[in-house]
Length: 213
Image (tube, rainbow, N blue to C red):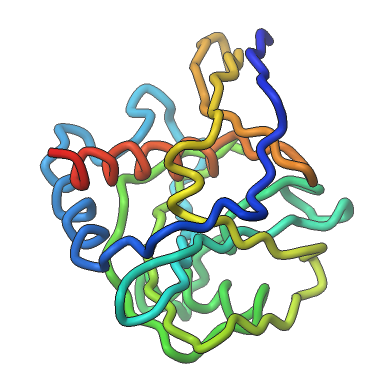
């Protein structure tokens, strides 16, 4: 594994102007034009069972301000101690994958109200070789309140404007004989990397192209 690491990025004080919801919606339309429905088309999931994650964007009527990530506890069955989107495996009683994302969001963070489903991003494959669908959710609660589930250690609220100019680097990972470059961001608590970073940075790059055509 070869990693290029710069300094730690502190999101405190990095908040900027809200991102208009129309621009967020534009990114979710644009990604549907991509040739492949997968972020990493050469990676194949180990199981046909699907998963979903909630890309929770908090803000107000004027736009999105923050993305909400969870830090899983060290004893979590998957991705212990790592940053991730709230999410998990699809259950037979879930209506669809967006319903899976909403259920996991409720179980892990206690978030249920003031949510609008905006659309889905191309699927990713996590290091556990599980195929997951990122579901974008608009959350306009006056002030975020969380009730952490048993597997969640903490919640991180990262400002979108700051993330767009943060010092992202690339981490080269050897996975099942294939070397892939994955975005990485050093945070004070723990690095943001892996499939979560890939989804987030890919979307942020698309957002930048929408804002600066």
